[in-house]
Image 1 (tube, rainbow, N blue to C red):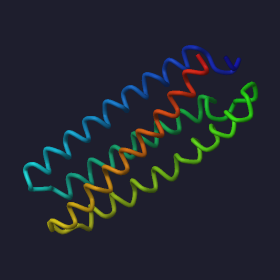
Image 2 (cartoon, rainbow, N blue to C red):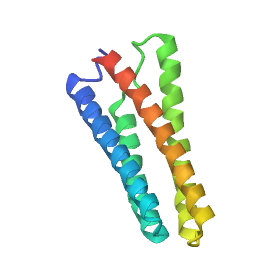
Image 3 (cartoon, rainbow, N blue to C red):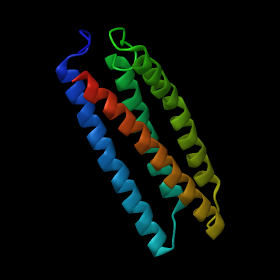
Length: 143
């Protein structure tokens, strides 16, 4: 294990990832319920996504501050490259979420707007889940 990263740091990040996994599942369930009801509330969705965005930004900042994505001198070169790629995904993921929030805030209660927003959010959740799984694999190598 990298001497700058303690087992406690790794365990804390793993708990954060588990919590984020739970939150992703809750989002999927909530959006499914809205779809089933057929009455989307765009303002509420935008507000809730803005809160989720702040949580996600804090999570990314915490990961980067822990050194797990930046203090990797003792790791093989291929892992260093992958960690840099994961770190570079953080602003891209937040940017995609920002676009979706903006879309929802400008959305009229039209079915095509709702369908597009739902598809984009599902795609975003898939990307986020893949990203978090890759980080989990990295954390497993640190412990």
